[in-house]
Image (cartoon, rainbow, N blue to C red; front, side, top):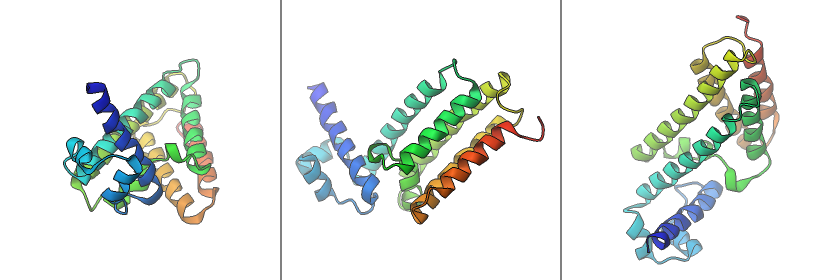
Length: 198
């Protein structure tokens, strides 16, 4: 019974993700979600007390999965810290640029939309983003130790890169052009390799 319950809850979240990544959170109606998931209204309220709480659960699950994948990527010590960093950003570029709908970044999609609508969801986004920046920081520190990344403030660099790539993702959506990503990739390599302190 527990497995079935978890499966139904996850099914609703998975369908919700696919709809939200296409049309946003505010535009998603409960009736549309229930129809797409093929579950009754009572099932939704059995797992979630409100649409907002559903959004919190969706974001929490998204970040948990994302950070597991990031940990796996950065755990590959056969690559230098620099190579692991660039592999991550190249994957970001590929997902956002090539229409991989099932892997689109919810931070890019929802940050501006829900920041003023839901304090609870805003905090989940903030905490999840902080977790990503923490992992980027550790990877940069590894690169500094193995001399593949120039000596610099790893935390500040991780924040700078993450914020830059979020901005590039937004500009990609606005301009329907890959130029922002291409500049971000070149700038990322320059920041990691060519700091004046080297």
